[in-house]
Image (cartoon, rainbow, N blue to C red; front, side, top):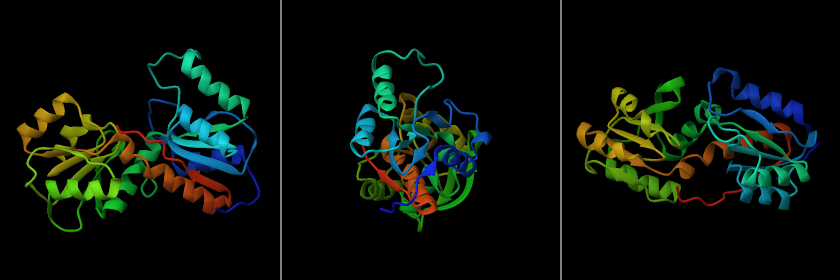
Length: 254
């Protein structure tokens, strides 16, 4: 709960963009400052998604900025600022709150990213990368285990029961994982030599792929697997700039 002098918005933006190597990524949304608010920042509320609930939490906590993984302005969506989009933006602008969002850069970061943080909490050792733009991680558990035991461990750590598809007794010595909605990386995970692929979401076809290939699949929750990157980033900001950063977990069962 450190609180020092405010940091300039543009200095904070430059530092975050550099730390997360934003320019390297081809993404589905703009990364960095998405909505401009006041130019000095001392209090930040962090969360997974820039939802109305998180905005209200930020207002209640007198935040100068929101820092999220899932921001706004996604490719292919309706760009008109009407309905819920207008309501969200109106509340931010009325309270002069900045919105910072980092999507793929926050998935991929070597230490602060969602995938790195997931491994840290579960005791997995990172041994490589796979998938588009090296977003996915490959590694090993602290000791040989089974897919069922791995799912049980994730239940304890994530406080959410994952869905396991495949043989619960399958021996696991190599894990591939990618947080969020990365079920389409299944074949890339299989090619990496993994015994199990862990992601947040699952699609209808994923069930068949797991059954037919023998590689187990664990869907551990999109929200559940993407809480830890923004938490770690907020802590890094707190230590670097001595400003107040608070993570607010807006419950999401998906």
